[in-house]
Structures are given as structure tokens and as C-alpha cells.
View 1 (cartoon, rainbow, N blue to C red):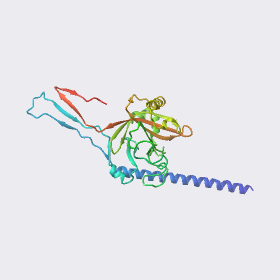
View 2: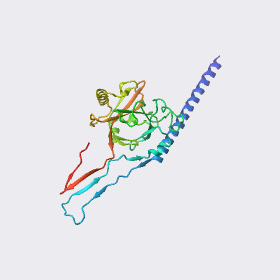
View 3: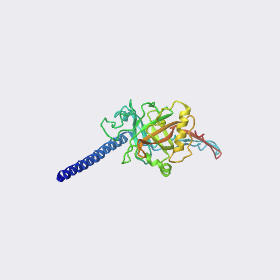
Length: 281
């Protein structure tokens, strides 16, 4: 009888060990496949931008006190994205999310529900890393007051594995902005709050009134894990990035930022040694 018990215990231990090794193999294999797919897309469709500065100066015949018009290059994202190239992989791609000097340089998709891309890559292969996806209830052009993007908190820091770093003030100060690029418009995402919330909460409501919007912003600021003086105006649209955390069952960390359109050129007029700067919106 004792031998039988030892046999059962030993067999159970072997099964548990085999299952653990198998799960680790699956995790490593799937995260590698996810990283390779997204890295390949980035190589094909994402280009590092080099800003240009053009200066128009008076001709030599003009008087020294004549005006000088300096065209300030438009503020741009650090990268540009070829969406026609991306669409060859998937028509569901609606944006590219980029955070400089972090692993976040990833496509964003949208489906007819919030389950489809939860465990699926862009090429249709099953994968626990999933794909970053916008809430199906949001408009695909990010024109809602608050657009929510979901991503997994991967242990190897891929996908939204680095969002939790915003629990530290130092990390926020090193990475205060992200960039959201869409086929229609590029945005700077000016981050203003990050906090832990239950998976089922008003944080995930699609905002319909000014009161609901203000309540979300006030809740986020009061519970934020970092502090900032970024202002959110009545006309600002918000981007919420959501991932799983383990403070308690079904906890989520949500990082919020203001969507600021970028890409318009500005002009500075220099006259008699003085500079007239455009108003900052």
C-alpha cells in the first residue's frame, strides 16, 4: 500500500513538472511569435523621422532691419507609419501606438467585440499575448471623449507589460508622453494619470455626458500613482490604456493621456531682433 501511495505521489509530481515545463514552453514560444510578428510589422511600415528646419532669410540687398521669417517645422511623432503597408496584414488595424525608448511600438486593432483579439495575433494565429485592441464600442477614429485600448501585461515586458512602471514617479518623468498615429491624424498622448481599478467599474463606461467625463478625470487624478501638472481642457479627448495587474482579483492598471493633434507647421517672425511666437494650444 505504501509503495502504491509513493507511486501515485511520484506520478503526480512528474505530471505537475511536465505540465509546468510544457506551459513554460508554450509561453516562451508564443511570446517569441508575437514579438517577431510585431517587430516585422515595425520594420516594414514604421520609419524613424528626422525633422527638417527650413529658414527663409532676407537677400543681401535688403536692409539689415528687414523681417526674417523662420518656418518652424511641424511637431511630429518620432516615427511615421505606412498604413497601406499595415493594411496588407490586417484591415482591422486602426492605429499604431509608440512610446520612445520602451517596448511599446505596436499596432492597434478593433473588432466587433472585446474578445476576438484577446488571444489572437494579427495573422489569425492563436496566441496568449494577443494584440492591442480598442474597445469595440469606441469610434475607430478616436473621436470619442475617451477611447480605451486593452493589452496584456506580459512578463517579458512586451505588449502592455511596462504600463505598471508608471506606478513610479521617476518612470513617468522619463516617459511623460506617448504617440498615437492613425491614417487620418497623428497625436501626442500627454499622460496625466495612472491608477488601479476593478475590471468592472465606471472607468470602462463609454462616456456620454460632461459629468461622466469629469468624474473619470477626477477619479484618475485622485488615485494616480504619479503626479503631474498636465491640464485637461473641456475639449480634450482622452486615451485610456488598460492592462491586468495583481493587486487583487480582476484588478486593472489604467494609464490616461490627453490626445493632442500634431503635424501643423508654424511660423516665427523675427523683426529688429525680436521674436513673435505662435500661441501654444
